[in-house]
Length: 362
Image 1 (cartoon, rainbow, N blue to C red):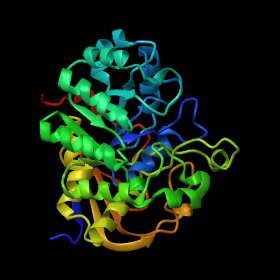
Image 2 (cartoon, rainbow, N blue to C red):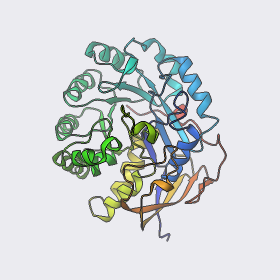
Image 3 (tube, rainbow, N blue to C red):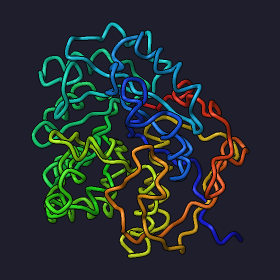
Image 4 (cartoon, rainbow, N blue to C red):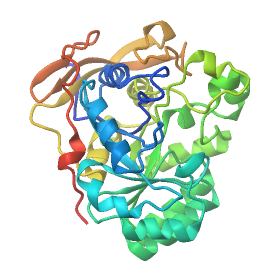
């Protein structure tokens, strides 16, 4: 018997890979390599890198660019626009992993604050792939009204407060088709850390109180939380240290070791870890790992997260200096050895679009 934990097809359903007009922050090549180093088979990329993925032309540009660079498998979200782009949905549906609606805390045409327009997007999105939402505070209740009306599977990204957990716990008890994602930075960092870290601790949703943090851990124990997602959002250090620092932190390489730390601290079982980083995101997004696709992790190896060893192009982590458990030893995709614990072993373009074959059961 192997001394390593075997995780079948790890999936991170919430990443921001950058590239295109933001290639100075990160590239599809650099961040899919970071994903392999983090143990992931597949990652699902959000639509808010300019040009925003809100029409067929922008989607085709992104598809053409990522397919030549990616070393892990990937999917792309389509974005709902405040201008009303529902007519695009039928034409792009087969190529994307889901629809993303930004209901809070973003800028430009992706911010959809009008409830009537949100309803129009919910109504128009075809059955078979989930709607993912950025919703905070009372907006969670507003989105639940739409889930109640249309009964379409809806994934609530990066939930961060006890109040939001309360609303979603009730929604699950009601039987609504909702799922919940939580990030490691909301589990391990709080508002005190945000003050100490300055702009390096700046993300959306913002870091919250210790009571909110405890509510998230309790929701993991109670299986209200379905997914641990990184919300990987790299920015160059020069940007983070600027007078107007952007929101977001990298996380693809630190999510698994931080959750393995939770196993070591007996806050999480090994089985629950596998559910949160692989089985549940596969189910929620209708993804089936190809044969012989898995990650081997040494749960017992400890090490210190070090900015100098980050593969993400931005080259830093909010968890720099933290001692963790769980080193990724091997990653296999479609029977091919793609990562040996130190090196990426496949060429650019190896990764495939998992969204092209995804579909969830209703």
